[in-house]
Amino acid sequence: MPIIDAIGQGGLPCLDLTNRFGSARIYLHGAHVTNWTPTGGSEMLWLSARSFFAAGKPIRGGIPVCFPWFGGHPSDPNQPAHGFARLRSWTVSARSDLADGSTKVTLTLVEDATSRTAWPHAFRAELTLTLAQTLTVALTVTNTDAAAFSCEEALHTYFAVGDIEGTTVDGCQGRAYVDKAGGGAVERRDEAEVIRFTAETDRFYPATPGPHLITDAATGRRIRVAKHGAQSTVVWNPWIAKAAKMPDYGDHEWPGMVCVEAANAGSDRLHLAPGASATCATTLEWVH
Ligand code: TA6
Image (tube, rainbow, N blue to C red; front, side):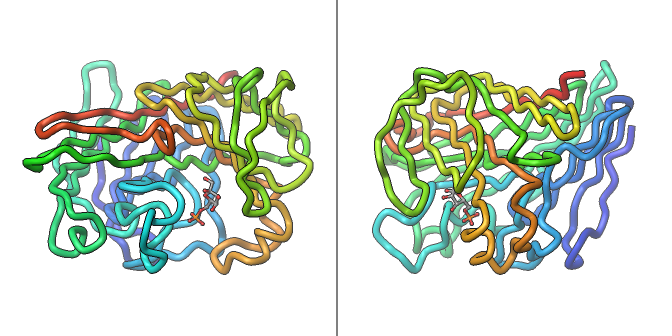
């Protein structure tokens, strides 16, 4: 089935994948998956109506690729949040239709003089999207340098929900997390069976394997988020005040999304020897 080169929002090039399992769109800008609609279902990913689609700006929604750091730059406040990978144009390095009817594309990013100013290492990042009965997004990072390096990464998935106040996320019960809501960093332990949302929620769960089930009571929809090679889970909804502060996020959009992210950050950051690779993947399944 076709993989079509298209021109998306903001005139940015993208690939449109369509097969018997559904459809998906990935932009070369940031290797950013913005859409996934399984056959018989509706759009599963959230995208802000206010999102930028421009060089040097992150797309707000879909699956941002955060690399080589998560959150603020460790030492330079002038660097972009969540690394530079989502701001760069990636190269389409492979595309294939598989025998089972699924479709796979790979986009690649390697270091250059610009990336070295922010992060002085040689690397190859490969983002592979597989559209099958499930949607799998995998980020493989290879250390092509002569010295070891550490890095952070996240597949920062924004899911569409009917109403965040009726949405739950499971898979974190009993787990320690860092509560970052309100800009803090308070260590807590999640005793509840599921996460419920009643205010800004910004939780970093280290050493949490998942999977996680997102249950959206408003639509009756459930999405399972499985992780592979991703030790951390991040759960986020900005709620009212933080939504109002983001120019690329509509003031009234916060009830319609939740982030459940597959990551390796903080104490779970990667340490790669020269020539070593590691893959962080998230597999999304519409449970119906
Ligand atoms: O993943 C949660 C988080 O780190 C929040 O703290 C919030 O900053 C969110 O990411 C969005 O980050 P961004 O840089 O995309 O606005």
